[in-house]
Length: 393
Ligand code: ADP
Image: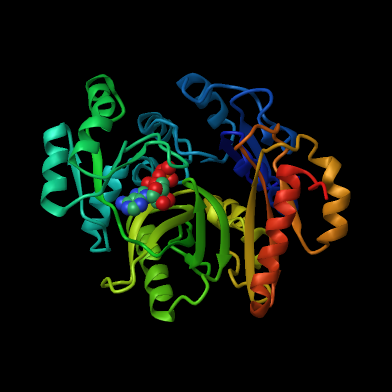
């Protein structure tokens, strides 16, 4: 006897981390894997290999499940619409997912909802880009509206000369693109830190928010997350949660959604919206050990339209530190030392091969608020052990 059959498109670490929650609940989790060796395949027994960019392959997988959801946002919107027309239960629906896939659509929606956007414009030519910079001042941030991740597809332009030199290849490729026809330009926001407002919504309309977290990026990749965000004012935290819940409700999002925010003290709301992700997100990994309900369990509950779980923090603070591939290629070789030295560290290794700079896992820790500095130091040391191996005295 099993619960709902939940099909996930994509077999990366997010799909893999849904597996423990599915096992606990008795849900039948299935993966459409990009290749034999994706990391979710070692955690999920039913994981056929197939190309989601081929409609027939995607549809054959989708027809066998009760609900179809995602590990990434790269499935073409028109495929998802076709699946829905065939009667497949797609969660989140393409009408909502488009705001996580397309940053120009997202900016328009944020304006429509009256939520705080940075200054932005759609640009098709260098002249339009230069006009935007001239009007509001430099630097600006130029983005491809689709297909970006971990800072790929984001370009900071310091001044007019920089814009002329760097943006040309992006404008040149525009006519050949079928997935977008303009670039997005934004003011470079003078933020003090990045925040993440993580929420979930299910089809019944029920919504819930986790405490707002702080995310620390290194080279445009999420490196550390602290929940709740240290020293955040209750007004900003409440407004950030309210904004994310409004987005989830008004756009009809289902599943977990992360609203990534720029904290800007002195601005009207105290923050501006960066973007939305409609799936479990790196900034929510702390919930695996730090919240009553992890984002992975919540995503399964939400897409299958079950009542949502409680989102309180276990203990006072929770933190997460990513670890990347580095000079140590024997992850398990350092486990004895790591486990001995940091018995409270929760290791989440994605089972991925070590490649320099590749995100291969994270460490979670929880504890009392007054131990934040010590916990961070332990998480950083544990992550460094995995990345760099033991340091030689
Ligand atoms: P991705 O889709 O790769 O996550 P983002 O749009 O989140 O791309 O941008 C990646 C990073 O670039 C952000 O986390 C932030 O640090 C920086 N960034 C993006 N947009 C802006 C902006 N308008 N102003 C300042 N920094 C920005």
